[in-house]
Length: 170
Image (cartoon, rainbow, N blue to C red; front, side, top):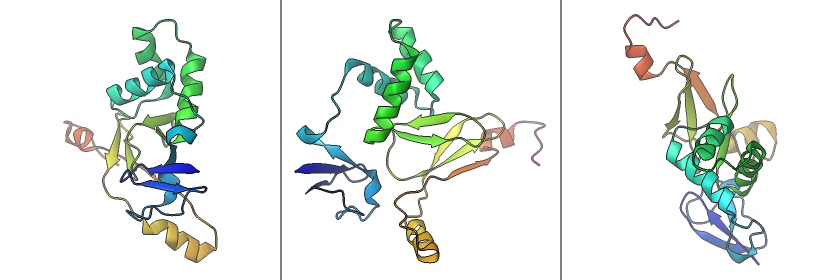
């Protein structure tokens, strides 16, 4: 039997398949991840170093930024190891990967359901607290598709950049 851990409320679901929605908090099951002894991914030192770097950077880092942070403390680690482990960790649900509007993927250790905003001026990424769980249901109703997840990134000008003297928004 496989156990799934909801990354929103940490509820453990014991079943052979992940539910469509978490039975405890009613969020979409795609955020649930395999948990416990049945999980096939083993924890490696490199994986822990990479996860710690993403969490420590706390800036929705790109793969290159993660690599630069890890290699400062562990110069023997290769770029391929970092990139491969970032992919493994996003597939397993340990990290959230989202695309920026005009740049590389970014990685987030905060895996609960949320959206992102990327500033066009300074390129920083921010978490947005609003989440529209009903959006998947509405798309399913209107299209007939079985929607299991969505990833929305907003772009514009952040508050800090708006407040900079002489910056005009378009």
